[in-house]
Figure 1 (tube, rainbow, N blue to C red):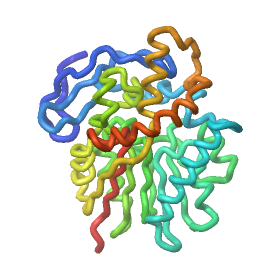
Figure 2: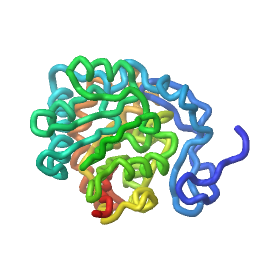
Figure 3: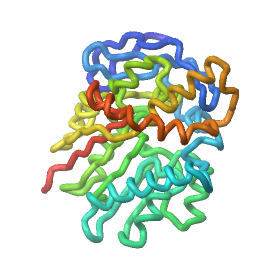
Length: 300
C-alpha cells in the first residue's frame, strides 16, 4: 500500500478509521480502506483507485443508470428529480447557463432545457452518456478534469458526486474557474457525522464502499468550498432516509437473511418510507445523512 499520504484537504496526517467495509449493493471488492484526518476530520479512502479503474466501480446496473419504470421506486425517483430541477431553477437567473457534474442519463438537464438556453452535463459512464445523447442532451463523457470549455456558468450543480472524485480540492478549484462572477455552486453529499453514520459506523450504507472515495461533514465540506475562494457558504441538512434504509438492507444481507443480489431489494422503497420519521432523531443528534452546501463566486 505504501506510505500514507497527507490529508487531501488540509495536509494533516491520516489514521485508519475502518478496515472492514463491505459492498452489499454490488458485491465488489477493493484494496482501499477508510482513513480519517487527525486535524480536520476528512475521511478518505487509501489507496485510491486509478482513473482507469474508476469506471469499473460502476456496473451497468448501477442505481443512477437504471431507472425504475413503475411502482413506488419510480415515484420516489421522479419526486427526487423534480426536487433537483427545482433547486437548479432557484439559483439560475433568466437565460442562465447550467453545468451538472455527474448528470447520469440527463433527467435534470432534460427538465431544464426548455426554459434555459444552455444546459450541459459531465458523466463518467459511457452507457449513461449514450442515453443522454439519444435524448439530444449536451453531455461530455469523462471527468471534470478532462472537460475543456470556454463557457462559463451561472450554476454548477453537483449532487452525490464530490464523494466519488479522485481529488475534491482540485475539482472544486476547477468549478470556481468555470463559474461566472456571482455564480453559484450547489453540492449535495453524505454527512459522515450524521446520526445514522455514527450509529452504524463501518456498516453505514452511505459509505457506499468502494465508490465513495471521500466523505465529508459540515465542517470539512465548508473548508472544501472555501479552499477554492468561494464565499457565502451555507451548509444544511437535507431530509433523506436512504442512510438508514441502505444500512438496514446491508445488515440483512450481511446476516444472510436477505439473499438478493440486485442493488435494491424489493422491500427497499417501503423501508425508505418507514425510516423517514428517523429524520427527527437525525436533526437532534448531528444532522441527516445528506447535506447540501451552497457557495458563490465573488461578483466582479
